[in-house]
Length: 306
Image (cartoon, rainbow, N blue to C red):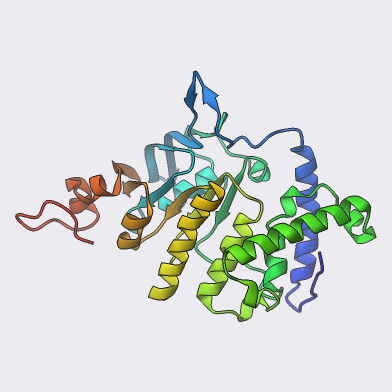
């Protein structure tokens, strides 16, 4: 991969990231992605299953006994007011938080604390509320960094351009070019990520998460801060990602109208508890959701209007 030196030190950070990722990839080489769909007793295992997840901070309950199952290939939304525990839940799934109680099952593997070093090997990728791009690097190089955990050649081998390193470089570049085309980023792939409009940067981050073809994609407020047109475009890309790659998607989003149209099933959190779980139509007409999250219905109303 070609590095662009920047005053912010992006190239140095990227080099260290490559070395750590290559080391983790070599350790996990023998293990298949745990998030692949499997069968137990003839029934498909959920890609993600949460069992009684509880989490607290200094006596304040963030999550209280959350159970959640995500089927292979579905788009699963988690909604709720600010402070409901949505991001904390994703942080538990991605290993950033260790729950006080409960287990996380990724495919056929079960964890009390998901190991962050194994996320890529487990077939999991994530985006965050705040963009975490290398703003001093071109879009193409930003996307290539999402492939780094698939590499086995260490940084020294890459510098020496060994046959293995060259082969992996070609593979990562081809995969990056493919996802860039898929998300309509061809026109900006050689531009610095930091100089692009915010909505385009959101697409770049999505491309970086997708480049290694994760089985499970976690999206934390992917539509926040963008214009209406960009929001509609990003929502279409998320739906197309599931359809084109078979990716299972779990997303947090505040735009209820988008959530209702995009998701197969929706879980609703309130004060760290799950108060509803079902299809968009079921959630829309759930009285607990109307009362606790979306506002108390007026007399005669039977469902949420979005």
